[in-house]
Length: 460
Image (cartoon, rainbow, N blue to C red; front, side, top):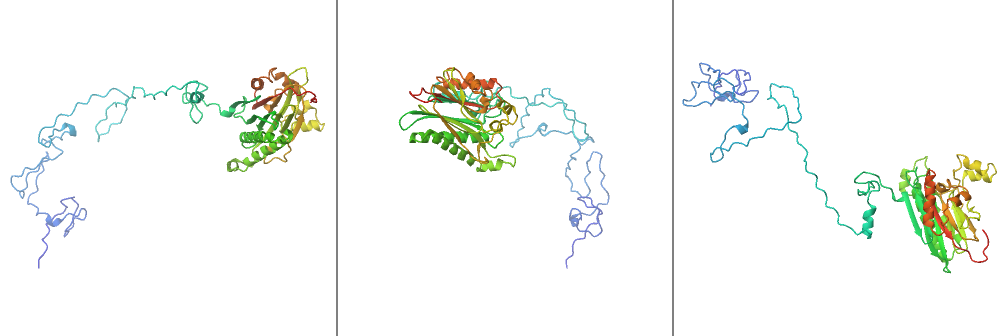
């Protein structure tokens, strides 16, 4: 039977030089087939210092053995060349063109690196990429828009109020200087026929929590009727700005719908306050409020005061501590305050426990006892009707104004003499009066001129 060829006697694997045991047919380290190892020659080859190995006696004659890669054949280590320094040929055998010369790097930041024997020395300097000196391309300017057009007014409205040059982003900040722009409710003005209103954030508050609604309509007989509603958000409640806005809109819409149907103005005012209360109560049921509301917070809340002026009748209505004043055109006639506050101070005065001066000097004076909101104890709309016997102007305002003109005489002194003829101007003057006094609160005022009554009208 055939036998396996006898393994040559070797002590180390010729591939990895791992020590071998007698009788091993394969290297245990690298798996080299030891049966293919030729018989060891009688004399060990001599290794020259230059790394060359004389041809063994068992090697074929005429074979040119290559020089070791780490030697130049003269006993010195071979120099290290970069690939680009070694001449080569292309696929046709022609010499390759020399590589382009690399310009020296410009001086730049110096880096100190430690010397390492196993790597070539790093250069002392590295060129850093400089920024592109060319200016960034500017976007093409928009086409000019006629100043008087609606589009021109929209463009003008988006110019920054601080630098007067930058455009205003959708988030309300200037693209040029980063200045936050005033919010829409920070300052509001509106005219509707003979009625005008102005509302301002004031100098201390971070937002305007007041709101108003003004409008004109006609009674069934065609006689004109003017409406003004002013609401003041309760700052200690959740979303007071939303409450005042919802209440003013609901009350104003209710009055403008009821008066043309022939509803008596005093009844229409009562119904308008109830509608405003429902609108504010509905805010407490919204999911956004439920998520934001904490145990120490109240539901959205606000106060309300309003006036309806017809040819010979003045109707006022209120809940809270916003007020209505009557200022006659003839300043020799006495002015009057037409509402009573739902407040701690008013209760102290009504109970005879304090004088009006003492009550309103107390720090608890402005604690309200009546408001619109889901957590109000009981809704008690107050309404009253008057028949002035002379022309004048009706001042409907929040405490942000009457804090600086509390008595009827002080309010009459602050109202411009031509307020009945120029109500918007008069409202601006009154807001300025509050701001000049300190502007500690939001300021809102509506002015409703009262026409000359017909002959035979009774006195107020």
